[in-house]
Image 1 (cartoon, rainbow, N blue to C red):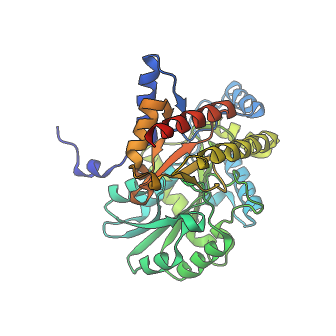
Image 2 (image 1 turned 90 degrees about the vertical axis):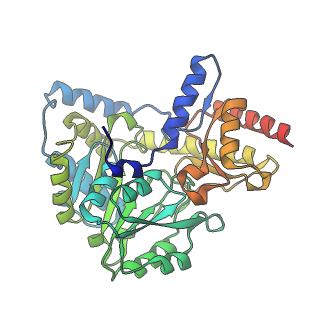
Amino acid sequence: MKLADRMSRLLVESAFDVLSRARAMEAQGRDIIHLEIGEPDFETPSHVIAAGKKALDDGFTHYGPTPGLPQVRAAIADYVSRTRGISVTQKNVIVTPGGKPVMFLPMLALLEPGDEVIYPNPGFPIYESMIRFLGATPVPIPLVEERGFSFDLDVFRASLSDKTKMVVLNSPQNPTGGIIPATDIKAIADLVRDRDLIVLSDEIYSRIYYTEDEPVSITTFPGMLEKTIILDGFSKTYAMTGWRLGYGVMPEFLVEACGKLMVNSTSCTATFTQLAGMAALQGPQDDVDIMKAEFRRRRDAFCAGLNNIPGWRCEIPGGAFYAFANIKATGLSSKDVADALLNEAGVACLDGAGFGEFGQGFIRFSYANSYENLMKAVQRIQGWAAKQA
């Protein structure tokens, strides 16, 4: 039976493809260092696990309200209001099984064929995947290395049109680790404030930053709260990837629309994971601070090692846990380098072009691995590069 034509417009995450290849090589006895998957290598904080266990013992093993448990939505609203300096209530919150539904559901609710969506390129591949799947038109904005992988505002301004229905922002960013400066966020807000569009602000890495000032949410600027969707969750900040727990903060009419879509798909998010997430937000934050400090240590050492390789250049990322190395001076394609590092050096990493056309010539490494493994990876990469000279 033939699949629907729209299925051909769906993209995939290359990280999972590379992971599968790397696992197959390990099964054959190869030693592989995994720098392909964007997943904290830390354990979920113990008090969060305890809260999840208690929720199971207390009987939270059944259906819950589609938009989320009221107490959890209230806790999220309080957390977002406090951390962003804005005012939202639980009516603005929908709890989802992971962060991706906060991309998929609002896009499904808002986009019509022919609508244009501005998004960062290189960027998380699911943005473009969902835009194309829905028949809308993707409008990529190249992230400029010289600007710390922020938008070229002139290109952004020229890309806005009467057909622009959505603008996707991601700061700190995957795959580059870049943070959009507050001045650029303000400029973007000024350009879109009076337009009939919505902003999807992917802030999943909002707590993982190394700059003196924390990343700025576009919702903090006048007139933007009522036209912005904040995407956030627990996977990255609290090392809860397997708990599948995210949330969106958005205007009430969108919460209602996304709720209808959830009723027709997932029904609700697992209740015991929601209570674990509430404990994460309301409990001690020491584990987050420890993890971030360790990521900084790894970032500094790993990027320094890459910058010692002839023909390689790696800007020091301001956030997330990714190094986005420029290898254009080598004359090799990023796909060839990524494949060779896996097959010949035993280092699993990602071709930057897997994140969009403007990622060509870059390699993405996740430094969410141990310091020891990262230093071993640097030695392997340096050894491989020396053989190419």
